[in-house]
Length: 175
Length: 427
Image (cartoon, rainbow over all chains, first blue to last red):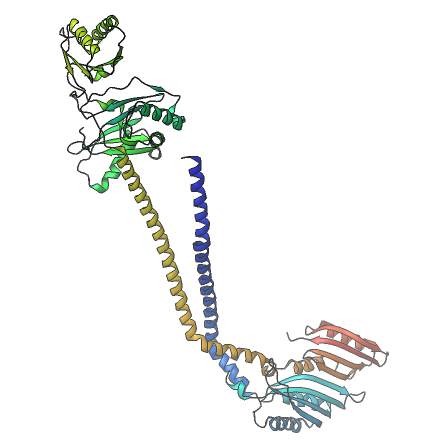
């Protein structure tokens, strides 16, 4: 075969290969890769979803429990004050001030009621009060608890509490 | 072998050897075949084809020899020939069979040869020819430059068919200067000689010598001589007289002499070659197309199945997506409720356990307890003496719930006041 013909055939062959690669092989490979990625992603999502669905009953149980410990949407302040009064009566703690305050709307935290409480009493009374809080039927998050002794013997203590309770807002009921 | 083609005459027969060309002009199928003594001696003509073509062309034009159609005669060792039997093979197996036969009998590699199939033999016989590709290319180039069409390609020996017996000597008076003498017998063609017509005496003695070598040794009788000349002239008569003087029976005729043996024409090479090339090309393209279709189909099938799988998975996902999304939102909300739904607030646990660290006999008092940010605790208090303080400090350091313990202030000795800060962690 003459040299010119070899060069021509080689050039045409290489050009054809480049064109085929550019317009056929690469697009097909990319399409294939895209489909593979989509399948892989979907399989992963389905696997996670199946695990999630398996835990649906447990999740619902937790959800119901969470709903049960929230303050009612209507009259949440009264409900909280009733509880505080109940704890006070049981512990005989002298509550000087209770100030419920609605939280600022936030995307991270659900709507809740913040309560600042100042009380005075003995160590036993305070412990009893805190134990009553712990056993309460509402969900409480303690943000600050300060105990200050008014004398050297520790019989007269000041309790400054800041805690919050969840409100069963309409938006929170049906996720 | 008989010719099945209608040949157009005059036909130039060009003999190509490695180092020279000879030619013969065939006026009709039965005309005598006498090669010229004009040879073009060239150094390996195929290495300088344009020059050779130019030389031939100018010669043919100057001699007014028609060369538009030519039969190329080449040495038989360059044109391989093999008679084969087809044994009633189907057309589809013929190609494979020919290739097999060629592989077996023709000493040229498959890639280096061009096969020419001549199915002219009677019954189921056929003839397979092969020529080296390079040789054929050279010949084609030469003829292309000559503007000549190759009518056939023949091995040298195929031009004449052996006759059983030698009937007469053929003498062809080419012109007034030379004679071509041939014996109509295969070996005699080798003896084709030239007598230069110079003078009466020299012709006489030369003819005598020549006839002595050409006459059969086995028989005592002399062979008759057929003298052919286009234009009888004085020299013709001198020749007739000379032959008669030597005891030969001489007949004079025009160039339309009957040649006893049929010329052994082969099929024209060009149609066969083109047909063969077209067949090969068609097969190659068919093969390439088939491979391309196969690959495309495979890719299409694979993509189809991939797509189908993707669609199935999508359908599954769409079916469960609402409940999954609902569950995910539920879980996210539960996550955000965790601070409130934790059944056992660590803060109260911490108070229980910290109070357990302090001695019960009134040797130490807590003055303040401040818990903030869920686990950061500041404590201040009093102890009766340094020993009690150190005991408390040691217990706190050993407690696994307590970390990052810092002593902020220690004052006095009895009583000793202290202030510490630490982090409380649930185990």
